[in-house]
Length: 339
Ligand code: FA5
Image (cartoon, rainbow, N blue to C red; front, side, top):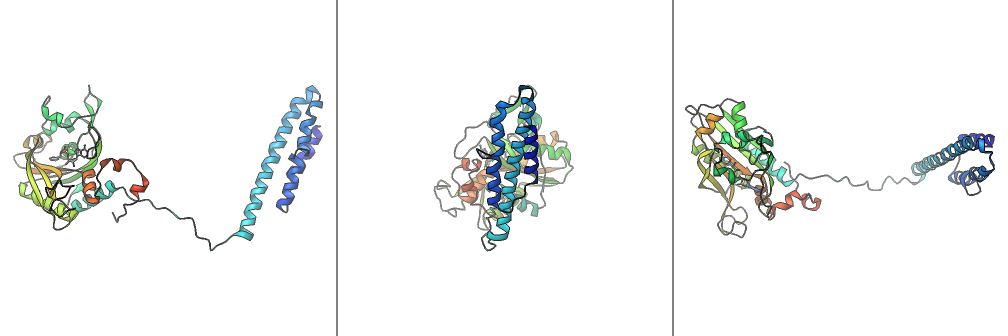
């Protein structure tokens, strides 16, 4: 019996078919119901008990070897057929689907590009922050109600490790790491424990701007933001500054741009006011300069922070912020751009 297994093994090893018909015949001959290998399985019951183990093992190895060899030969015969007979070189190739940039990435790249033209360089800070950089150095005293302005996700409340609620934390890091003049923008993700709605998310993106030098004035801030608004939304865009409050800037302002969808005439997106809020800004509070190691007797500066999702919504007429986080390809593939 073992001898029979060896003989079949040599046959399998040596077999080279000339056609797929020949291969199919060989398969039936070996593995078909009445094939030589299958036959040996039926004879298994007649093998003496002491030989059963060795015989069974070698028979199984032979069967697997025959199956693999036949499968391999089948594949290579098919491949040969394609190259020699059926290959149609005029058939169109499978389309290569190109991805597109996410609208938030497009807006990010365009804004970075605009500020780069004014000499701003990108400065990055961590998303997991400490209380100092997000609040204390930014003039939020402990227990001050201003901390409630942004509901915070704490990673570890005892050690005051948290997810940054705004990119203003990077202002502090930029001032700690560099000497004036400082002209940076800090893009990044921020997190707030807020209810998700059509206009608000618990995770979104901001870009912070910071300029520290001698004699920086509110007029510089206004002119920089006007330049940005015209470059980004179009040359006829106007801006409007409304007094506001942030603990880290004094004076502070909310900045609106004339609605690019209705040209300032009034529509349902701008709620018939002709303007839309895009960012918060102001002159860096002297306490923040001091806390970050900058001499507030010599230097002044301005800062601003804008929300990328809200700007993307304005630019592309998106009415619900949630679509920016769903990653639905049908939505995303509409956005193609050079940026
Ligand atoms: C701030 O976060 C300040 N750090 C901005 C600032 C920087 C002021 C420097 C002064 C100087 P505010 O909470 O308003 O401010 O957020 C800024 C922008 O982020 C908003 O104008 C809005 O565009 C966007 N934003 C705020 N909350 C959300 C939210 N939940 N979902 C999406 N975008 C939001």
